[in-house]
Image (tube, rainbow, N blue to C red):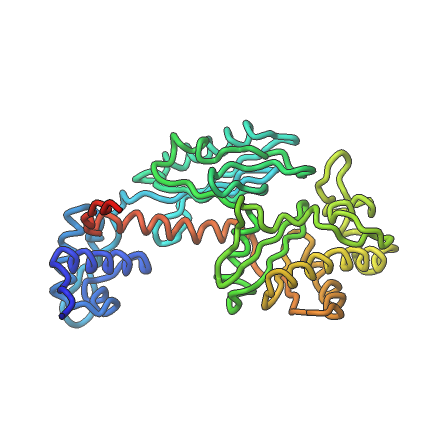
Length: 384
């Protein structure tokens, strides 16, 4: 029996979505250009543009083509379709952006957090930044994607304080902080996971669907990408490597975070790594550079050996404030391990915001096209 033909409603919805998607890839297009990009006939595109214009999703920009031939009108997405909030929350600051459906940053806010700022101060700063941005974009903030420098519970989106966590924003609840300023869903993940997604999309790991991303900065973290997806685990804590046991400077086994204490490279009264002191120590010509580099490479190499044994990556990407400075030493050390894989430096700046921004654009686009999709009838589940 021949499959049923799609309904006229469904065909119109698919056309409308194709038109919107085309206009999300280019700031303005004529109906003829949309037809050429989508492969849909010009009359069908014209009908769709008329429908979408009536709904306020598409507007005539008032601009016209020039040159020989028939004059065409340029169309663009409507100005009231809102924006997505992209925010990075660290121990130092909240950085927030309003991003439109073409991926353009329409406005940006940055608020400093004082030393020892806790979850309330971080929540207030996040809410203030969101409120200011919502006032500056037509259509408001329709969704949010948050990058946080702490573990994130994958069920609730709340930040979670783990033992010896170096930062003080644990138990921040971004969805609650943004409830009054964002009308749609709020997505929260750890900054290292967002950085790994960015390196996979636009950075060092573009051609690798299986890799490990290691963040070596003030804090220590990792992300596992398998089959092109970041693996988060039952609670969302995959990649929390600070307490993985590694060889210390004298060969004694200790948690990775304690290696930096043994080397005198942690900030006073904190488990955060003193990045400036570390960079000075490993700089070429420094008195203890070779000794420190060897100790760090041995400790990091143990982390990588565990990662290779458990997840079998194609390559390892190292980012963070000081991670790329140590890549060559780590790579040389790791090349002598039983299962060596390439160890490469990360390439992107602000990779966590880049990754969050990519997801925010996807979410905003899905919200914009959703009114064009026909509702599917639901059927009651038959009783067993």
